[in-house]
Length: 129
Image (cartoon, rainbow, N blue to C red; front, side, top):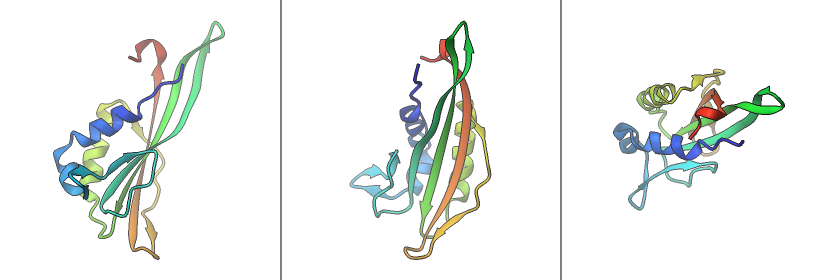
């Protein structure tokens, strides 16, 4: 079974009022995307599914999957501090564990910083909706 949680994560992030206020709006829509780079409007957030691997088997059947997501916070002024903590809280509420620490990435050509947050969770198939 392939577990799809990208939409749930994006919806959970969009439900945080402070995050919606922080990101740029494209039209009236917050610049929060799934599995694609944001447009040229910053600040922006992108959610990427990195792994969705079978983890545990019983009786030759997949019982759990390990999901890993990357959440990138893009800004031109490095103002991601409060937002990253709100997203961290929300991901932990969803049962994810924050993973590897990645240093702040900086695109000097475009003057854009990228705070990368990595989260993983092992999910039992019988509990997944």
